[in-house]
Image 1 (cartoon, rainbow, N blue to C red):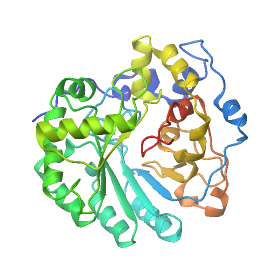
Image 2 (cartoon, rainbow, N blue to C red):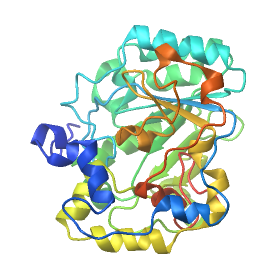
Image 3 (spheres, helix red, strand yellow):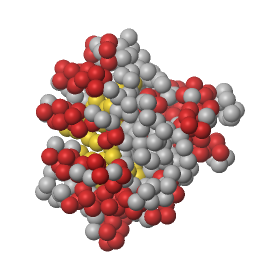
Length: 356
């Protein structure tokens, strides 16, 4: 069914928070709010990480565009139907392929967006990466499978290429899902999950992995991933006969549209206090920024997808794929800022859910 969007992107609305510089000023108490919190760099220095160093790169993550068929309330990418210009072109993808093929430690290529499937070169790129023997992850919003007939065969395409599908589903109820993602999202998401199940995804013995991603709908931290997974499995199986492999609980970081929500609702200071007070030093060794390279639609290099959205490029002489230098990127210092508290709060948060 047609999805009714809750709002437009920050950029389309002319909101000052569409500027990453403004977001960083907010996070550091220099704009909009005066509250300051302990520096994240100082926190990790207490456990011997000054600076935070990287490990060999294993995950090559690409945000291949901000174009999306949804405008979700919590989106840290500020993606949406109006973000048509920020899409990775064929030449940039070809350069990424060269890098992926040349770095033996890269085992996984993680493709995200926006809705990455809307990029005109998406299928070609997936096939090329698969041919290199790398594991492909597609971060799918689910509703894209139902958005247009040209996407209806994506489940078969994913299965053919053994793509690991990591799909977003805020909750197992219509009210909570649609309130976060737009009217009609829940119905299309359930239909998409059933389409994926029909080709073997989430089924034991198929080797086709289907994982769900849970983000809280408000200014609070996610509950236990294990508890949430058990409840999601029970409810989705009982109500819709849907199966999946794992659920990843991911903390909302105070970036872009979620930051806008926090400020508009008067929850910013309280939420930041929650993140700082829940800081868990046991998560630091498992942070995704330590074994990941994140590439933007225009080819710049970042430590993670969140840094990418704040335009915090890697601390290296090699900051663009056209000047890619693995030696310059090895053992670099991870660029950190106040949003990093989101990845280290409670059990921690990464693209694969809880850390500890």
